Length: 318
Image 1: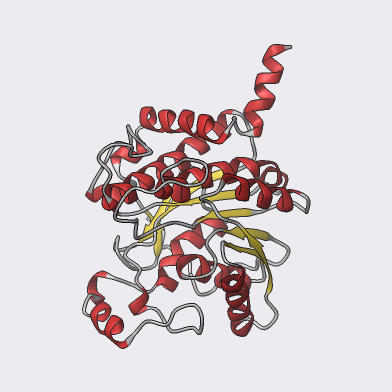
Image 2: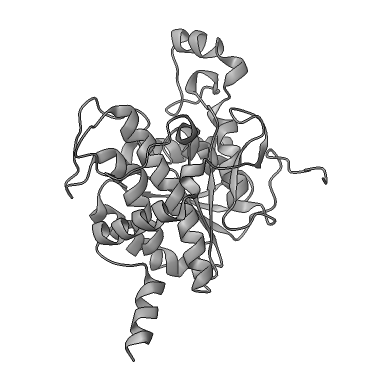
C-alpha cells in the first residue's frame, strides 16, 4: 500500500474556494473553520447565537490575520432558519463544500421537541442537515463540491436501528444521540448513492472525529476555556483521546483532499485519535434499507425531495 503523505497541518491551497461550516462557534466546527481559513478558503461560519458567532470570527482573525470569513445565523433545529440561511447562500457564487457539523452532544434528560414538532436531538443533528444539504444542492453542484456529514464512534458501540427516529417512545439521552448519528451517517451514504444515480456533480462523504475533548484542546478566548479541573480529568484520558483541533482533521480532509471520493468514511488512524485516514463505518450505518427508510422520512418531515428529484419527477410526467 502506498504511503499516505497527507499532512493535516499543511493543507492544499484553497484560495478562491468557498465552504460553509455549521456549528462554527466552538469545538470541531470552529477548528475546521480555522483550518480552512488558514489554507486560504473563504469560510461561512454559522451558528445560532450572533454574539458567539462574532467572537468565533474574531478568534479566527486573531489566528489568521488575512482570513476571509463571514458569519451567518443558522439553527439546524429550526427548518425555517435552515431555509432562510440557505436562501442567503444561494444568492451568491457557487459553493465548494458543506460541512454538516452542528449538533447536540449532551442531549436533555427528558425528550424535548422543536418549534417544528421534532425531537430536538434528531432535528439538530440529522434532520436539519438533511434539509440544509438539499437546500444548498444547486450551489454545491455549480461548484462541483462536496458535503461532509459528521458521524460518531457511538454507532458501533450501540447500533440502534432508528425505527422510531423521533423517539416518541423509550427516549433516553444516549439513545437520542446515537440514533441521530446513525441517521446522519446513513443519510450521508444514501445521499452519495442518489447523487451518483442522478449524475449530480456533488460528492457526499462522512467523517468522524474520534474521541475529541475540550480539556485536551488549546485554550482560545471565547472558544475553549476549560477549567483546571477539566484539564486534569481530561488529561487522565490522554491515551484514548485527542484535542478538538485534531478531531477536526478527518472532517477537513474529507472536505478538501482532492483524492477523497463520495461514499467514503474518514476518521482518526487509531479510531479514537491520530492523523486522518480512511475508515470503516459501522454495519448499521451501511444498511441500505435503513438508509432508504430514513431518506423517505426526511423527505416527509422537511416538506419535499431534494431539487434533483423534483427535476426528475417533472421529466417523468412529460
